[in-house]
Length: 306
Length: 173
Image (cartoon, each protein chain N blue to C red):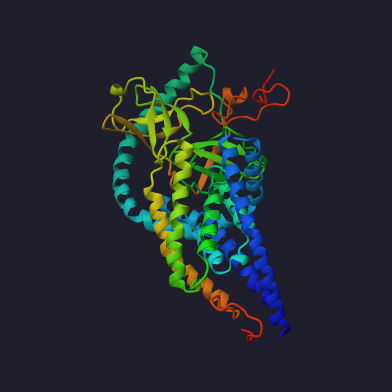
């Protein structure tokens, strides 16, 4: 009986709390709307809160990614089986064709190595890479971003390019000590300067809300042919040139790009430790707004060299 | 027993949150459905035992999901809070039956889904492709009766029948 009385007291207390929490609920709704507005204004508080939560939950996400890997593999295997059969046949043909090209490429590389010293060409900066697990896959109707379980502690920096076995995945837009957020190519905010085909026609690859890539600011669309290879141009100074992005698909006067990277199913990615000229001068970060500096009021220019 | 009874709704929400965060490699529709999963325990417990589903926890779950999956902070928070409000408004007579709860969830998922569509549309000032979201809503609505049944069994496992509120002088359950 005492237990029942305790129950009743608790029930009654709970209902009183529930009445009070009615107002609390509406206050939280108001707070959520306020956060939405602050996010639209890209307020630093929102960014800090997001970074803190990501930082706090990075170990949990890593553990979940480890545990869920067998399930994800099974889900992936079942949906991939049919696609793989047809792709396998197609790849056999391509391998046979590319083997011929490989010999030709080796010959050209040898010639380039001989000729480069004669024209006193500035050598391109080399870069290393680090491979890591994707702990948060892209979801939701808003942004196409993914989280990786490595951060500044592993040497990652904002602006670094991210690739998988197929090609360019995106670039790092936010980094904390244990986690980093990658803006995928398919995000509507993503813009990557590229060149298309053997004519190296300059253009911009951008994502859209449907999750596909479109080609914009093309100098001359009529010079492009369907199936042409799209690679990074390195024009922004943020990404290295020559990274494979995708294959051109022309239909109805619209130019779309089929990405080589498996953006729909990322499990491991590699971050390229490439510090291009823009990153050296602190221009990396693209469209993501920098917090105003306390002294000057302008964007912070960390790492600028004298 | 008391602790179990009071913690059960929050515990189920946390478990579903972990399921939401796990990268399971679904296609895009499945991933959207995963993000909508917390709506199930939030709505069920708000409908059945609103006093045991703290709005603060709902808010916190929303902030976690918003923080980890990009998008503006407050988006999923608002969707989850709307599910909570819908559950509280719909709670009452006959709420204890699984079919009744499912029917009410079918109605509750409408404003939640509409909000999930409207916010990105207003944000980007162009209509979001609604097909995936619609499919995700249907998937979650289809999963609701099973989850509701599991929650009911979990709740009744400790002798608590959600349709029979405690009364002074009544026999202990």
